[in-house]
Amino acid sequence: MKAAVVYEAGQSPAYSDFEAPPAKTGEELITVKAAALTHFTKSRASGAHYSANASLPAVAGSDGVGVTHDGRRVYFILPGAPFGAMAEFTRVRAAYCISVPDALDDVTAAALANPGMSAWAALVYRAQIKSGDTVLINGATGMAGRLAVQLAKHLGAGKVIATARDAAALASVKALGADIVIPFDVDGADPGGAARFADDLEKQCKDGVDVVVDYLWGKSAQTIIAAIAKAVDDARPVRFVQVGSSSGGDITLPGAALRSSAIVLMGSGIKSVPLSDLLAAVGHVFAAAVPATLQIATRVLPLSDVQMAWDEDGGKARVVFTP
Image (cartoon, rainbow, N blue to C red; front, top):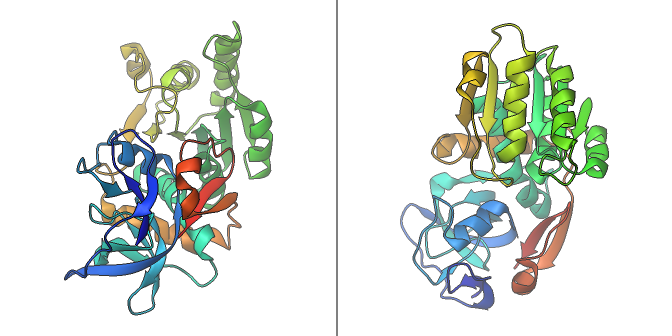
């Protein structure tokens, strides 16, 4: 079969031949229809993600949409190594598959699944969002951040605050349901950027923040924690959920920020959320896609373009490969 094959850790996969997966008891043989290119997939393929399998060569792709041998259209996750989602066929545990509603086409379902799973798990399973909550999404211009804004509104958030580095992109996030948008520059290009971001946050936090979903970590997350500690006067818990770290893997966390606030720090991802719940999250997102009019931009490419597209900046559109 044709597949996107990783031969060396850290290298882009090549479009080449790979042995098709044999049938195995307890697993589904799937004809793949669509597989999205996500940070999770790239991280696992490079060996950097904590859930990665180090054995190579292997087929890239952590999840996708396809058809089982008996004709069911399913979303699947974590094919058994060395097989992956970016191939004509793959092999997945039966328990790692869920049905795709007829209302969603293959490409949209593949594009929504990973960022939607991330957002739903953070908001529902970790933060336990409640109707009327004020929710702050840090990194709201990314795929998962945009869906988190939309899902927070769908789940009853009273106010959604969106923060990100790209001021122009934040304008489009406001159109998706964000009530307040706060652009920032905390990395030194603008000497007063960090102070203005802190001031803007403190003004918004005066009325209270219930949930923070953070896709960036680094200095922006550090600034948010400090602003909440300074601005929130009561002991109302703030559920801070750490999801991604595209701005850095570490922060400086003053002990005083924890002592002077009711911030609860937690993470959301594989191992902090059971895999069964992550799969269920995808099902909930699929069910919400039509009533919540979830929007996600896609760019469809043939799998033969995988090596060319792997290291490109996908911009604001999710790249989806079709074998």
